[in-house]
Amino acid sequence: MRLRLAVLMSSVALAGPALAADPAAVVETYAKIAEAGYGDSLSTAKALQAAVEALIATPSDETLQAARAAWMAARVPYQQTEVFRFGNPIVDEWEGKVNAWPLDEGLIDYVAADTAVNEENPLAGLNVIATPKITIAGQEVDAAEITPDFLSGTLHEADGVEANVATGYHAIEFLLWGQDLNGTGPGAGNRPYTDYVQGEGCTGGNCDRRAAYLRAATDLLVADLEYMAGQWAEGGEARAAVTADPQVGLLAMLTGMGSLSYGEQAGERMKLGLMLHDPEEEHDCFSDNTHNSHFYDGVGIRNVYTGSYTRVDGSVVSGPALGEMVAEKDAAVDTQLRGELDASVAALQAIKTAAEGGFAYDQMLAPGSTEGEALILGAVDALVTQTKSIERAVSVLGLSKISVEGSDSLDNPNAVFQ
Image (cartoon, rainbow, N blue to C red):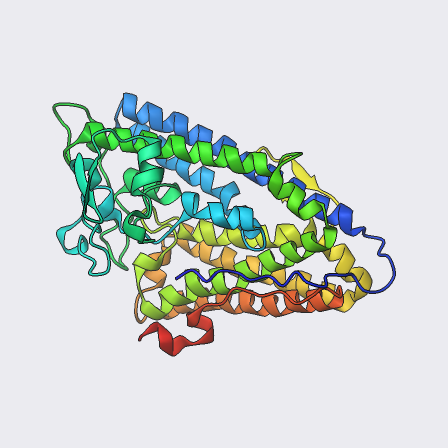
């Protein structure tokens, strides 16, 4: 369930005397970090595109593993941009094209028979790769040619169902890994490279159409990221929307931090899956990369407050920071919030370290896993705690109230099981 954000933009004003940390300069740093983050997301997506082309041209275990590694590398900068989604309508309206989840993957390709049925989604077992003529909402659709336009214009969220995710990182992830059928046991998806072998030796059937889908989805991801990188470049609409009025920009910064911390990450991405003990609620459920996605979301939140982002080439984009403004108004609030941001990143790092040591995130979700529960709840609690200080920072700066995205898992747990 996606709860749309309502930010209260009326009567926005900074209280008190002028601050040494100029609001316009702080918002400009925010825009520069967004530009760099989406630029890195684009460059790593292009590297993924090249790896996908190599896989299609010469299917082998080596080219498949290289494409998977490129996908994981592409997630590192992108996850750090998610903090720009909330409070920026241009980003929020676009985000579902590239990072929508969870998905009914049977829409795209073959899946285990017992997972191809969803009473709320008649297309959950469609398998468009095996079906060149499909029916959507009672209308026959020609799916003979799998192109970016077909994926984005016809298949994505087909029949108005959000679980019909046909584009973005997670569609590509499924095509590279396949289903993870291990439940809360060890192991990720294990799609064989032979699913891309053309002619004799093809497994899974329709290897030509599977390759066409993977190419189209990857090309579309690159195009979508080109669009968003342009939005944050000099003269871009998203950049102008926050820099034209610095007070509005400050609200966008704090709204993004609070909503990603609370409802989205602590709630929908972490607490909900733990309550349901459901590995299908993992963010990167096919690849078992969820620990990295969670970690870099947390880093992205901290980046906005500290006004600093480390690019994939190791260079740093930094400038006047939101934290400096808060410190000038109330040093204690700044000190507390900085400490809490570090604590949440440390808690997410603990999950990352455990996963990289062989205790995957889906195993942490298993019923009765006290160690997994402690790791996940440690991060959830840290994210919830920092959200309260983010709201205090809003008050300290004399800004109008922000509306932080919520989650039933945090706000009304009984509703999760109804």
